Structure formats: structure tokens, C-alpha cells
Length: 448
Image (cartoon, rainbow, N blue to C red; front, side, top):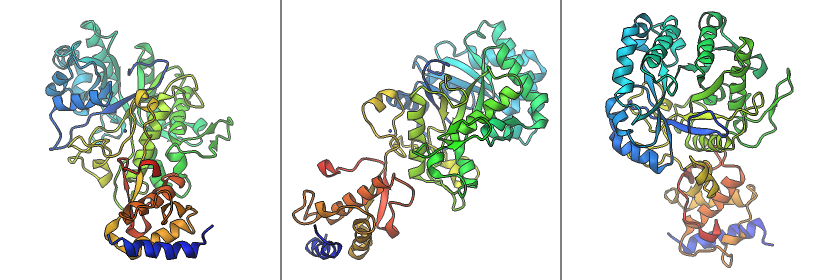
């Protein structure tokens, strides 16, 4: 066995020689995607439909009823959730003739050639600065009445996406409760409507926000669906292996407390940003790939949460594209699975078929950065092969993966082994700039 010092000497010689990726409540979980369009550089809708089909995505959620998008989706076989925006809630609540006209113009014009299956009435209304909360349930009732009038209520559901901030308590999950100012006045009537119409509650669930604000107490493994010891609910003994499921069960507990534990839930938005501001702890490519990739695998497994184990998860990822027109912190413009040029931000499986083919789930790799120079690469390799616990004999002269023509390639092999060994955790592929993360599989061949 060669000593670490011998490795370092061999490495020096080595460098010397070389200069040089159906929304129906059913028996299995369903993955859909949010198609937002707050950007000036997105591909045209027909092209987007081709991308959706190529990726095997059969559920899409919109934030409006744009005619070009709905027309492009016609005959595609992709089921669509459309939206009546917050600014139209007051008119929809006040006048049935308004919703009659809206349904005729925005739904029946395209349906059934475009498979509209749900209408999201408003979006996160309770945090709307224009205070449209009291219009919500009356507007939903009028939209539903119009669907009944035109014979479409049996196939098109009516709901409204609610932010997790509607909860007054979410930890532990069993203590989940809606805010007192919302519970009786709007949440209870909303749940009653959903139950009467056989619809479902839409919830926007973002573990990223909780993790970013509490990274000192919430482990990244728990937030990203990685292996972890789990968190036990002290009130009922249920053990949670992911923050996402704990947040969902907090909503279920809040619904139970109001007497509507039999209403289904759809996660209308969830995601993780691949880039963020300096103070947005956890935002980054590796974590985004891990969260969304592991979430897809979790959803497609078909199991429920600890509180509702028999109820499959149905989730819409946010979002299809990075949207450069979104205001706010950098993260808001970096939730997409795809860049506007249709290239993947990171590679994850989106369908059960691709998972069964063995594609990586949120997979990323570590590559050496040849531009930092020999000294930095050697220092990084010294660490990986000594303190990092990677057996590097296989890249030394005489080793199975020794390649005298590529110092950077061999350093990449060692760096990637270390990165994968560490579970692709954030910060384990950097080494002071000597390495960087990639989302497309490198050509390591048999030496990977």
C-alpha cells in the first residue's frame, strides 16, 4: 500500500508530465408542472407543448387563460389547470353573469379539445395586498354555478391555491391550525364548498423557505428528502423523514380540526431555486436538483404522508422555466427546471418510466477546474486523497484509470468520487474554486 506522501510525490510527477432529468386523485402519485410566463425570452407555446410532451409531462398548470397557450395545448393530451386572476375576484363574486361570460370565453371556447380539468380561482389570495379574501368563496361558487349551467361541472373542478402562511401553527405537524382570522370566516366555507363539489384543496408548499430561515435547526437532509433519522411528532409518535411531508400533514391536521379531514389535497406549487441572493441559505443548483429529483421519486412511489398514508401525493412542480420578469430576490427568477432555450438547468427524472430506466434522481457530478492551475488542483487532490478518504491509487501511474493525457480528467475522477461519497452535499465540490458542479453526466466511462 502506498503512503500518502508517496501519493503526493507521484502526483507531482503526474502533473510535471502533463502540462496540460394524470392530475386525477388516484392510486399513484402524479407529477405536473407550473408553466409561468413572466419573462420576455420564452419559447412560443407550440414549442413549449413539444417540450412538455418530450419530457413526458401530462399535467400543466397556468396562471391565466391565455388563448395562444390554450390553443397550443389543444389535442396535445396534456391536462390543464387554468386560473381566474385575483384582480377579477370581486367581479366574479358580485355577478353570476360575469362568470357565465368568463366561462364561455375562457373555458368553453377551448374545452374539451384542450383538456381543462380545473380552475384555480385566485392565487394565494390571503396574502394579496389588495385584500381580496372576502371575495374568494363567493367567486368560486359563481364559477362553479356557471360550469353547472353549461354542463361542465362534472369534469372541471374549482379550487384556489393557498399559501402555507395561512397556517397559524405548523410544528409539530399534529398541532397544525389555520390562522384564527381565516379559519371560520373563509377556510371553513372554502372546505365546505370543496367537499360539496367533490373538489380538492390546492396548497403551495415550499420547504425551501422554512429551511432557509432555520438552517441552524433544520437539517438539509431532512429538507431535501435525503436519508436522515427523521423527526418524531411528540403528540402522536409519527416519524417524518422530510420537511415536505411534515408541512403537508400540518395542513391535514388543520383541516381535521375544522371537521374536513376527508377533503383531498393537491400541492399546486413546490420547488427549490437553483440560484439565490447571498442571504438565501440553501439556494443552489445541487440542492434544487436534490429536492426536485428526490421529490419526484417520492411522489411516483405512490405512498402518502404519515398522517394519510393511503392518499397518494399529487404535486405540481414550480416551475417549467426560469422567468426573468419575476420581481423580488434572485431566487424568484431561478425556480425553473429549464432555461428559456429549453436546456435543462439540471437533469432529473420526471416520469416513472425514466426512473425505471435507472436515470439519476437529481443527479449532479463534480468536475475539476483546470483554469485554477496545477498548484490548486494538487492541493485539492491532496485533501481528497488523504483527509477526504478517497483511495486515489487508481489514478496514479500504473493504476486502472491513469491517463497521462488528462490531468484535469483524472482530478475530476477523484473529486467526483469524493462528492458522491459525501452525498452531493452543498460545498463538497468546490475546494477553493478547484472544482465545480455539472448537471450532465461526464464521460468517465468505466472509471466513474
